[in-house]
Amino acid sequence: MNRFDVIKLAGDAGNRFAACVFVMSMLVAPRFMNGQCQPENKNSDRSKQENSVTGVPQFYDQPSFTVAGVTDTTNLGGHGSDTVVRTRESLAKDTVSLSKELSKASGTDSTHGDATSIADLERAAQANPNDFQVSYILALAYAKAERYADSSSKLRALLNRKDNSVQARAQLHHALGDVEEKSGNALGAVREYQAAAEVEPSETNLFDWGTELLAHHAPDAAAEVFAKGNRLFPQSSRMLIGLGVSWHARGDYDRAISCVSEASDLNPADPGPYLFLGKMMNSETTRSKALAERLQRFLQLQPENAQANYYYALVLSNGRDAASGAANAGQQQALLEKVIRLDPKFAAAYLQLGILESEKKDLPKAIAVFSQAIAVSPDDEEAHYRLAQAYRLSGEKEKSQQELRRYKELSKQSKETKERESHEIQQFVISLRGQTSAQPSKQ
Figure 1 (cartoon, rainbow, N blue to C red):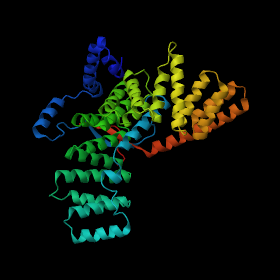
Figure 2 (figure 1 turned 135 degrees about the vertical axis):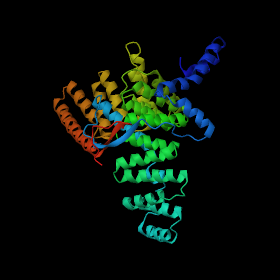
Figure 3 (figure 1 turned 90 degrees about the vertical axis):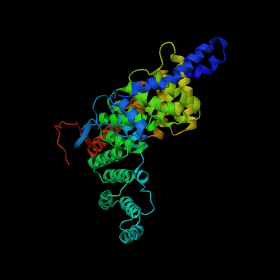
Figure 4 (figure 1 turned 60 degrees about the vertical axis):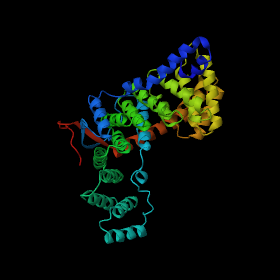
């Protein structure tokens, strides 16, 4: 039984008691899932008690870690297959995208970005040196114009003022974090985001601190920050998503799914959490009832959403067995065909449809669909590989070899791109407080 049976049950007098039990179980489910999602927190009771007195969320315990330095990332792999690693990297990037970018988070979308405006602002700042707002807008204008050293200098000067409010200090630290990140100083950025969160632990400040840690391959530390954020802001879906992605990066897929499932329960109409769940399904090693139920709900709430249809088709594929295989395959095919009608450029749907045709041994159809996938996405490695196999089974050896050559070329390019990107990312060196890291800082 799942939650979608409630209406049916309620209409049956003999099953009304069962319906009541089910509804009650759904009311307590988020509390249970939160227990699965959250790491153990010895200070949570104290934090709740003091928060109720002051009305202001604070850090009552220092984070257990420190960012001791950075090092070049030479291996993004860690545990898991290459597919798992790519999924983990994609999820981390998607989580970072939930954070406000520099132009929005700190107001650098200001129109004061061109040389004339900066000159006007500089004159205004000189004429009114004590005007906080003018100097702050000038600092943002410098950042937008990519004059990061000038922006940093102006923001630090403002931080030294004795009359700053708590909110102003947090705002300045956060803006400095944005500037340091944009200028390539990841270590400086994470320290400024941390300072902003500790001065004013708002949802935005905590989330941006966590995403900075996650982006630089420090999932344990990120999980601690997101867990704190979730306790302080239990209605923040993106905090739960960040926590889930941190668990995923650590290889705890069940807990990751619990967190993101809970995020989807906060606002079932929001497609965001479902898309994270769909991506997590690619590397999930066990069948998850929670994941399947949420993606089924996504489809029921948004039947004309191409991604909702696609991800539920994958659920059906993962759930196929000897007894339900034919029925599930038929439903899966119908969903994938609907995806293509809704979005003719949805390359992954063509790929999955081609796989279905291959399983049915309908090689001409499989070849046609794989070819469509390549037409939509010419650099899709898997589509070239699968097309090569279909050609081979059809006896078309020359075409098969041609597709295999293209597959190998794309695989080589993908590997080179991944290696290049890995060297561009500085990985945080994390130490427990009171301990010294064996890895040297580069800064």
